[in-house]
Length: 388
Image (cartoon, rainbow, N blue to C red; front, top):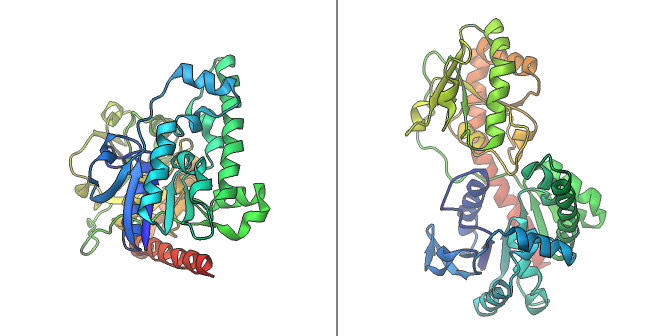
């Protein structure tokens, strides 16, 4: 079976939650068939992209304010227009025509435009089956990603969101299968399109790889670990909340614990509170996990999934985080909390129950493996349905 994974970006040029999810998925798909990748950017003109065979580039994508206004003026979504150039549609049709693929896997909504607008050329009874791996419900995130105090800008963003919604719902109707990153997204899509319930499913994020060997912990696990790059606004907002809300509450309840912030820019928060360490960027994260009682993820905005949550679970470290931060995570070792009091309660319970903490650490590691098994089960169910 030949699979073509269509990507809206090269996921190997930088690392964040979204590209982590793409890389993890590619590794899973490579076990399911003869995998090729196509996408936007010069790197897809090379024979290999991140260790996977390339089927070719769909061209370049550039952002332009003028093109944004032109797209809205003619009643189209700019988010879609910039990925559906004449070059992209021509190249996509050529790639699919000569590839004899069984499955087209569109990873993220913005990987779909060239395929959607050439669907009459390949969507036929004998043609490839199509899958959308939805990382988000995209039209709902426009305002969160491009927040502004300018009323005109907000109006234009509203128009863009409505246009993108119209396209997004069309794509969900046209593909054979939709896999969402969170159960909440799955519920929202089926509420918007009840007739599609049978072919929209929640697929947890598979891990790229598991850490080898036995999980290692220090005798005293006195660190509450937060990992994040301050250049990404959701991380910065989370750290500011830790400093302003969580640190004092934790110091009063658990004076023996310290909060360690790791990632670019976190050194500016060194000693912002007596129990806060700002480590800044570290070259090797392997030494950060063994002393950690847990990691915390008070993330409330953004998109995609938190790759550091996955990494924590892989190392056998439970996570205390918001429901928002749980996107793409299916693990009993993720303990939900919203308020500072709830975070402190969860953390204190872990500290006071060493046996329970150890069991939860093993659960964290096992959940990383279970995500891969879940991917296998859902993939086989999809294949059976397509062949019936």
